[in-house]
Image (cartoon, rainbow, N blue to C red):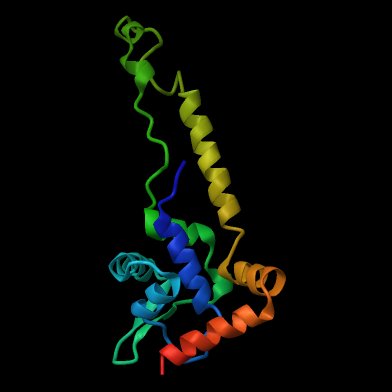
Length: 167
């Protein structure tokens, strides 16, 4: 299972928005410059985040984006689904039903009599991953990064940089 780099970009950029001053927004140009990524690519990611209700657009000269809900209500699962879509990770092709033996009606063609164990395992794995990602929020990540891992100066410098760029 592999997520696109867009998921990582989205999480990092959303993380910068967690503790912004009330009434402030961050523009795509500032986020892309700070992160060192393509503005065009990040715009596409933010369009998906906006459509999913994770961020909201603030119009105007000093416009940009803000979080659409509090950081403790935005999960990693929300972000992954916004960026990657909500299609299942695994698609069962019913290979067993197309085999030579299936043409002889072995096993019976009725899928309820012969469920695909592979599909069931993959479905359960996906559900477990989504369940775990739903326990991790932007607020949790912010606490981990800026209170447990990085020095306080990093958070201060990051907030100052974005506040300076938005003036």
